[in-house]
Image (cartoon, rainbow, N blue to C red; front, side, top):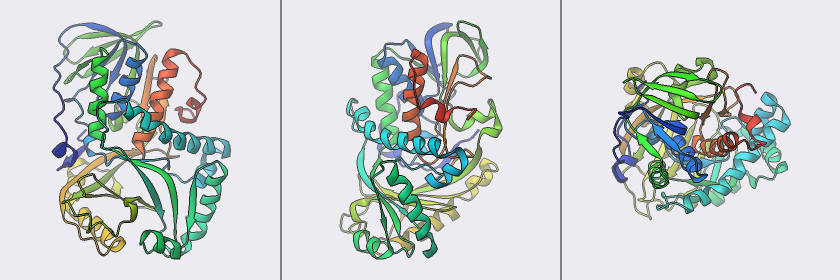
Amino acid sequence: MDLKSGTFYWPSVDPAAPRFGVLEMDTQAEVVVIGTGVSGAMVADRLSGEGLDVLMIDRRAVCTGSTPASTGLLQYEIDTSLTELVDLVGRDHANRAYAVSYASLGKFRELVGGLDDDCALNDRQSLYLSRASDDFQTLAVEHDARRKIGIEVELLDAHELKRRFNVDRRGGALWSARAMEVDPLRLTLALLRRAVLRGVRIHAHTEVSSYDPTDTGVTLTTATGRRIRASRVVFATGYETPQFLDPDICELHSTYALTSRPLTDDQLAAWQDRCLIWEMGNPYFYARTTRDNRVMIGGEDDEFSDPVARDSRIEKKCVTLVSKFGRLFPSIEIFPEFRWAGTFATTKDGLPFVGPHAKFPRGHFALGYGGNGITFSFIATQIIADQIAGRPNPDAELFRFDR
């Protein structure tokens, strides 16, 4: 599947990814990680840090799937609001899912702090904006639900939102203290560097053609006939996974994003604290800034049909995104320099899928589907590491396939 297209910001400012060759001989490892994007890199880093012998493979060049198209927002919010999630999965399940996501952001800085690059990680506040004046009551209910489980959040009416953040929305907003932004490509490359130093072997352009499990391990056969024997396999295969697992686990969407030319600090002054922006409803809209004073915005999702149709809409969708940003911050004029489209997946309840699946014995999946995929990938890394080590993890049941 062609996951993305257009011109991408992160590869233009980050170092080039290292090149790794195809697997040319039969080999073995304790764990094979399939996928070298941000999810696979987190898993390999964690498992190698626990002393496991890890091999990574990817059908493409390293880190050339969806990761370079990510906009790098780190939020605890799930695509499904907490109140909606309660209706879908029950109160205890919903509360725990939000609490786990919220707690993970408190641990994320520790992960990055041990790397050789700060990965442009910044702490931010976030605003979850209304769309209409009658959204205020919905936000009030959501505010109360989040506060009850210990999330630091405030309900802002239109007056307070304008006073504090210079944003006009009659229905107000939810303000959250805990959010982050990161350069996802730099993060992935830093994780891969540390993994390699720990002995992780990486092979690109190596596609798996068969998966043969036994009671004690798995034999993977590549498209070129090489065999890999492993005790466990982790699938960090992102939005291509439904093609070989189960197309009904998610819905595919097309999403659109752009990054502006750099602006001055004075030009960005109207954007108070450069807080992350996320708008309720569909098609949604979100916005952030970058360290070199660019505006990055995205959204305008529609149903995925095929890459050609998706790509033909990039220009029109970006015009709409610029217009939405202009209404949000009339004093900030932006000119797009990078424009792209990508494919992403959503689940029925907005939660990721993490852990084993009956179709692939001795396999574990790290599928961080949804708007806060990097946060989900971080959670998946901890769950899978515990599962492989045979340790109990109370969060595993929240994201299992058969929930």
